[in-house]
Image: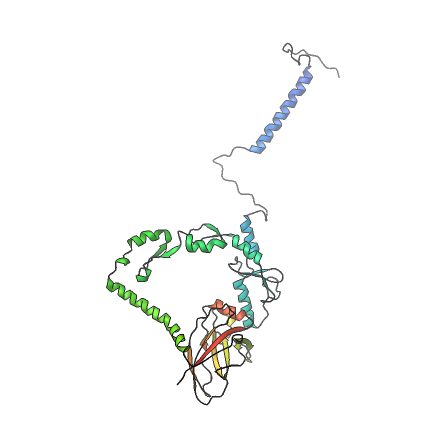
Length: 377
C-alpha cells in the first residue's frame, strides 16, 4: 500500500522531523492505550468513592473455616462432648479421642453405677472407665491459655490467670468491709472499699453494742470447737479401735434381689476391739431411681456381727481413706450394741455435696477409715 507523505512541522534539530504521520499516529495510540489501562487499573484498585448517603452494604458471607477468630474456632474443638462447655479442670478422653471435662466424666461413671450399665462415650459409644480413659494434658494446657471474660470487669484474660485476677487484682471484684465482724453488712466493688471504710459507722459503735456482737461470735466459735473437743475427749478412752494402716474399710457395690434392683454397698467383715463388724451404705435412702435425681447422698449403718455378753456402749465416726480425695466432715455417732440392737440406724455420710457423692459412686470401691471408741462404764 502506498504511504502518503505529508509534511509535519518539527523544530529544527528534532529527531522526529523525518517521521511520517503514520508512525506518529501509532505511537499516540499506544500511549493512549497504556494511559487507559493505567486509569482502569487505578479505578479497579481504588474503587469509586463511597457515597455518604448510601446505605451500608451487606457483609459478604465468608466460607466456613475462615470465619471468626482462632479462639472462637478452638472453642468448638476443645469443648466437652457432654456439657458442650470448655473444661475448667482436668480433661479426659475416650479411646477414640473424644473429650470430657472431669465433672461430666465422673457423672457418667456414677450414672452407669446406679443403672448397672457399662458407661459409654456420648459420641462414639465406646466403653469408658477410669482404666480405659486417660487425661489429655495438651488440651488442658491449650484451654488454660484461651481468653475468657472476667465476670466483674468484663476484660479478657487467659483462663490460667483468671482466678488470681478475680481474687486479688480486679478492681471491680465484690468485696466486704473490714468491719464485717462487728456487723457491717456492706459489700461492693473493690475500688469503692476505701471510700466506704472512711465513712463506715461501725468503728464508732459503743462498748455495749460491740459486746453483743462479740457474744454471737463466741457462740459460733464454741459450736465449731465442740466437735474437736469431743474428738479429743474420745482419744482419752482406754479402748480405741480403727481399721489398720493398710486395711481401711472397703465398701463394695451390690444389688438387691427385688424385682427392681437397687444399689447398695457393703464391706467385708472386719475386726475392731476384738469384735466383728460390717458396714452397709445406700444411695438416697434406697430411692427407686436415684439416677434421675440431681441431688445424691449416701447413708451408712454399723452392724455388730459378734455375740456379746453385755451391752457395748460405743462412739464411732468415719473419715476419708489415706489415698482418697473426697472431703468428709467428721460427725460422731453413739450407739449401745447388744444381741438385740446390733444395728445402728442409717445415718448420713457427711460429704459436702452431690459432686463428692458422684466421686464415690464413680470409684470401683469406696475406701474409708472407721474409728470406734468403747465407752467405759
